[in-house]
Image 1: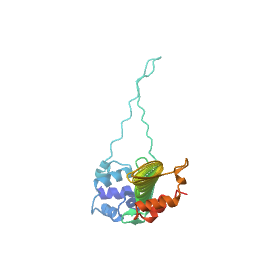
Image 2: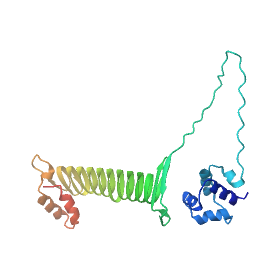
Image 3: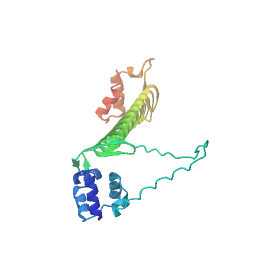
Image 4: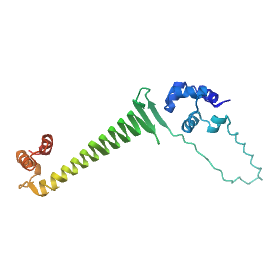
Length: 273
């Protein structure tokens, strides 16, 4: 039997249509049709995938040969009365690795619109991707990478996670991004318990331009209770630094940075009374 005939026979035995098989392998139905007509042959990657899917060896796919069945173990020798067999025995446990996968038939530039894949070592990749490791325009997973990304570890333009890295915005326990908000925040604009950036607001704030916090250190302007900077503003009364008059803070920032972006100015002064 030729390879093309074996591929067709195995597919039908397993109850797959050409469309079903193509979806499982992530290829086109035309490619499956060419294999079964003998017009082309699967490459080594697809042979390995077919081997796993059909539960046969690659040799069986290529040559139609299966390994001979193992010989039956020889019976244990009779032992004299009163003696026991103490020979060592090896027990092999086969534990199936469970996983769940859903992949939509609709695609966008070769990517499924929705791909959900959970399981050890499994990865989801689609326009919307959900899984242990997820990559997509919108991704959700333990580790996620996408334009909009949610996960324990997330990387993207907009990211939310325990560790979030976002080119535009990051929100997380540890956040790194253009605009970063988190317990520890590092960014151009950073807000957090510990905030480090060009503009920083936090309990401890370190900034190159404007630092605002209980402890504030800046290369230019520092505002808070304990301050260090070229220009500083602190509350002379034993009160929270947020008790400083908002208009006074706003006027000082405008005097030092007359061209500051007004929405950013609003963010920096919003915590004051």
